[in-house]
Length: 256
Image (cartoon, rainbow, N blue to C red; front, side, top):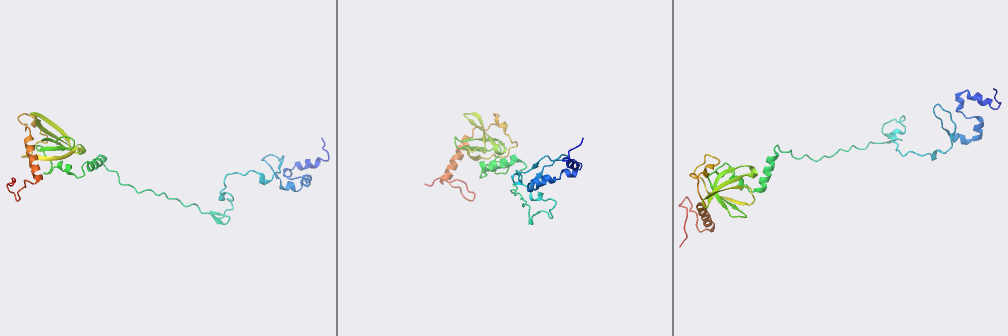
């Protein structure tokens, strides 16, 4: 099959792959300056079928910001420089932490008990009654408990329970010849005062005087002893009777 004379030059040029990407003289003369600005769209292992004649300014640009280091990564001479300007990294922000607090207590319950005792007994008067010294309470003492909302109760101290805030006193007395016992919470805010009416003559050998419940060991009513103590304290407060100094006989009557 023979080709026309007008197509023979094109067939000769198609034999060479290098000439496929070169514009022909006829197309270059016809297009003029437009072909110089156009950019061929070539794909790998394919041939160019059309050219993009749109200007480069009309192409959509990506909104992804470009880091200065990524523009000319191979031409960068010194790190951190861009067009003669040194780009410094942002300063490192060091977090400022608050000062550490005190370490937690080894026994939280003891710390809580101490805090509660300071709230319920700021003067430490009730705590001294629980001490094991001579000033503390002992089983066998006759006490009078004064309340803020009721009448006082008096009796013999049978048991002293030391349990921190739950410390309590067990008192026994006789009302109308009937034995009556009462537990009193020492740190109760309604407890106004604890008066030691009479000390025991000797130290008891037991911490719980439960044997006082027996008829032969029962002390009986202590109302007479408490009434004498109340009268004596009232006279001392009024100033009618004064204690004799230097270990005298003790009491003085009214002046006539």
